[in-house]
Length: 616
Image (cartoon, rainbow, N blue to C red; front, side):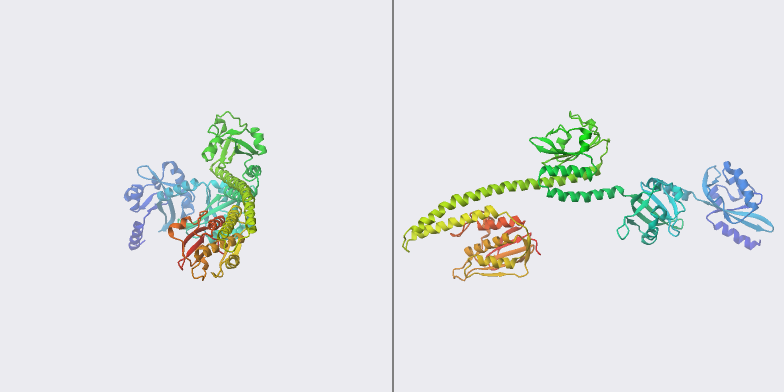
C-alpha cells in the first residue's frame, strides 16, 4: 500500500463517527482510530497488539474468539451477529450495546479484518421506550411495513382481541386479521386511504362496519386509528385496533329506546306505561330484574315487575316516600342512585339474591328499580341508559297527566257552558219575547235601549261560550292560505265600507277554523274601534313579518300604556263591544304556540304581530 493511499485511508477512518479497528488473522489489533477513546476509554496506541477480545465482555470472550476463527475461514462483508444483542466493554468494565460490521481486507498476501463498531445505546433506549409505549396501549396495535404490507410488530393486546399469539402474525400480510373475503378492501383502506397525519375509520365508504376475525371465527367490530411514520429509514403504518362492540351495542340500545319512546307516547294509561317500561328494560337494555313503582298515597307502590325480578327478590313491597330506602331517596332527590351491593343497605327490606342495584326517578310519578345478582354489575353507562328510559317514562306520564287534567277542565267548561247556555239564555229569550209583545211607538227610546241591552247580553253570552269551548282548542294543523281565510272571515263580519288588503303567497301551518275565528275577532275589533267619522270605513292590512304575520288597521290605534291590558277579559272602549274578542284572539294564538304583541301600524292604527309561526 503506497504511503499516499495509506494516508488517505487513515484520514477517512479518523473522520468516521464510529470506532474503526483493524484486526489481523491472529485476532490482534493493528489499528484503531481516535473514536475508540471516546467510545471505549482507550487511547489508540494502547490497543495496538492486544487481542480484540479486550473490547468484549469477559462472559462472552471465548464465544467471540470461536466466532472470529469461523469468520476467518469464510470472510465476507457482513454485519456481525445479525439478530443478536452485541455488547462492547469499556476500559472501566461497563458495557454498551453495539452494532458491528465486518469487512475482510487483503494486503500483500496477508488478511486483516476491518471492524466498524457503532454505539447504539440511544437506539436501544429508543426501542425500549417504543416497546414500553406499545405494550402500554390498552388496544391491539399492529406495526406494518408500508411498502410490503407485512406486519413487523404487534403488542400483547392483539392476543386479547384476536385470540392469536402476536409473534405468529409477524411477517404476515396485515389483512390476515380481517375476514378473508374482504382482503382487497382492507388492503385498499391501508395503502390508499391512510394519510401522513393519520385517520380514524369505523366503516368502509359504503357504510359497512370494519371488523377483525378471531381465531374462533367470531367477528368483532373495530375502530382503526392509523398513521404513517418513519423509523430507522423504514416507512411504517401503526394501526390501533379498538374493539367497539360495547359502543355498537349501546348505539343499538339507544335506537331501540327511541322506538320505545314512540310507544310510550302512544300509551293511554299508567299501567300500560309501567308494563312497557319493565318490558323495555328487560328485552332492550337486558336488565332482567326490573320493578316499576308509582307514587300513590304517600308510598312507592309496585306497578309492574319482570318475571326475573319476582324470581330473584320475591314479591316486592311498597316503600315509604322518605329517605329510609334508596328508592325513596332517589324519588325525593330526583337523582339516580347506584349501589354495588344491596346487602350493605340496612332498611329492613329483603332483596333476595339481588346484589347490585340502580334506582332511577321518574319525576313526581315514581321510581324504576333495577337489580343484578352480581356485585358491582352496573357502571356509569348503565346509569345513563336506564336514566334515558326513566326520563322517557316521565315524559309519557307527564303527557298522560296533562291530558287527564285537560279532560277534567273540559268537563268543567262543558258544565259551565251548559249553565250559560241554559240558565242565562232562557230568561234572555223570555225577555225578548215580552219585549216583542209590547205595543210600542217608534219613539220609545227606553224600549230601544232595553233591546240594545238584550243584544249586548246575547253577544256576551256567545263570546263567553266561544271562549269556554274553543279558546284553547286547536285541532289538526295544516298548511293554510292566509289570504283565502282572511277573505272568508271578512265576508262574515259586518265591515261596512271597510277594505281588506292581504298579501298573496302567505301560507302558515295552523288550525284553519281557529285561524278564521281569530281573524274574525280582529276584524270586528278594527271595525268597532277604527272606523272614521266620515264613514269611509277602516282599512285592514295583512302581511308577513319575520317568523309570522301581522294584522294592521288605519284607525286611531291603541295607546302604549293600554297595550298590555287589551287581551284581558272585559277590556273594551266600545259601548257595543263585549271585551272578550281580543281575549279569544290571545287564547287561540297561545293554543297554536304563537306569540302576539300590539304595536303601531304603518298608517298609525293598531297592529297585531304574531310570531313563532311555522311558515310554509
